[in-house]
Amino acid sequence: MIFTQPVLEGNRLSISRLLTQVENDSPDGRIALAELFPHTGKAHLIGVTGAPGTGKSSLVNQLTLYYRKQNKKIAIIAVDPSSPFTGGAVLGDRVRMRDLSGDEGVFIRSMASRGSVGGLAQTTASFTQVFDAAGFDIIIIETVGAGQSEVDIARLAHTTIVVEAPGLGDDIQAIKAGILEIADVLVVNKADRPGVENTERALRSTLELAHPTKRVFRHHGQTMSIDAPESDAKIWIPPINKTISTDGKGIPELADSIAKHIAHLRQSGDWALRDRARLGSELDAVLQEELVNRFFERVQKDEYDSVVDKVLNRKISPYEAVKLLLNGNSEQEQ
Amino acid sequence: MTDKKIRVLVAKPGLDGHDRGAKVVARALRDAGMEVIYTGLRQTPEMIAEAALHEDVDVVGLSILSGAHMALAPRILELLKANGQSDVKVFIGGIVPDEDAPRLKEMGITGIYGPGASTEDIVKDIRAAIK
Image: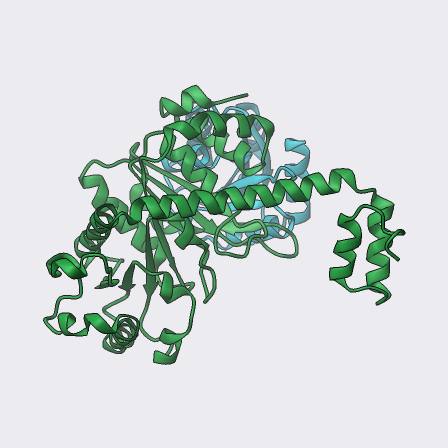
């Protein structure tokens, strides 16, 4: 069944069914996605990432409560890991979002990562398109508990929030490449815990290393570019927000930082750039998958197996094997 | 490419705070390769039906130890139906007196499991009910 029309009308059962079709890559799901695509591009995508236990789900819960007061329709995509052994998953993010139930303006969908390693599932981007077309104003994507390199979210979201909590590591963690680099907004959650100043200081010094020209400017106690001189308007320095997501402290300030980031994206032209990068990388992913599928449609199973055997026997390297397979005839090249 | 995963909502309606059973079952279903959406304690029937709708689950597993199953089960079935999800199979685990079981099945509950039930049976029954 193709759900394009009811999804455009915001029918919740149809949205839910379509998401399942998309997740399972069904032909009907692909048709609906294609038909919905022209209706996308309106929603603001906010990514929330960070280590397990930093309080991402609770933060999403509070942020959503805040946005609901402004009457924005919110979709939440919460990704949790699949077991690498059984493919099963326990998706537990809803536990922290019970305040949101009973509100028709909120749609929460849990997703298993199904073997993807970048912090999202393969079809998370398509999920955002479904919600976008269905008229949700803001789509919050919560990644799996991320370590250091689960950075796919930065490619998908307009605004990426990286959540830290006190006591997770010293300042050398903060200068490593990876997750901190992708932050548009930094959050130190659990700000009622001891050590919050240290975490904040480590993050701040990281930012100073990354943006040396802005140092003077930050001494005025203002981390953000709202009061920036004209010439600096193009540089965005991630603000650091302290929150306590169990009771909602710091949430309005966080929402304010997000709003400033959106304004910055639109003003600087980065919004269009990010959209282009995002859709480009989505295109690449689909292209790769399709090329691999086409290849396997063409190649004979026994031919493929014989090449794997050669690799296994150390007769040829994987690179040579690929050459053989792509050139069609594995015997010829010997 | 991907095969259809069985999605199960494990929910704990009512007011008692004993969620060990629900967690054991959630874990067992995970190990059987299913995707389990775990919602935690003290869920109202409305919250459960809403979660089932958002998550497009195939199965709802209810853990009920409070004795309120004869009130909670029909309410949840009714809400699922109202949302267009009468095809969702509902299982109950917990403390259900034998004499209540036939009536629950009549209402449309697919399976009922008491203390000592094997998780293997639960997995097998869910697979059979979904097909």
